[in-house]
Length: 87
Image (cartoon, rainbow, N blue to C red):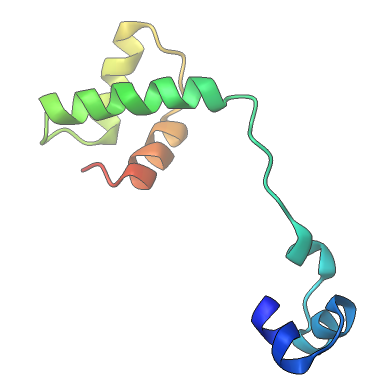
């Protein structure tokens, strides 16, 4: 977006109008979630499990986490495994 504005030498409003995007999308800054600390602990534990058992995928890791006492959704485990590139 910045490159377009500089090349066209126009305002943000006009550039967004020409590119047909909403200005709120350009100004969007993601906020940290309230689960950021818990997600970080979960990421480290999943990394440890992936190091111990390379052949196990997210479903089996989810079972192990539940046995350890974690209250975590399987979709969350899947998302974190995808983010980290865990097998």
